[in-house]
Image 1 (cartoon, rainbow, N blue to C red):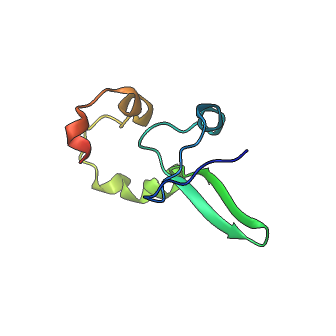
Image 2: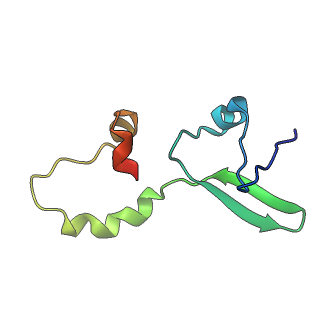
Length: 80
């Protein structure tokens, strides 16, 4: 598969590739260098590292649902 690099050094991946990787607008991709080139994979949250913050959350605050948050539509102006 060949993708084109724009004058601003941006790349557009085919939708089927991004769907197969499970990424959506706003997600991040991680590039890892290897002897054979670069490996591109979705950057995922390591939930095991978040446990150290649990003591900083006030009592009575419900758990944060990241899945629901990602599906909620927000004003695009908030992302600037």
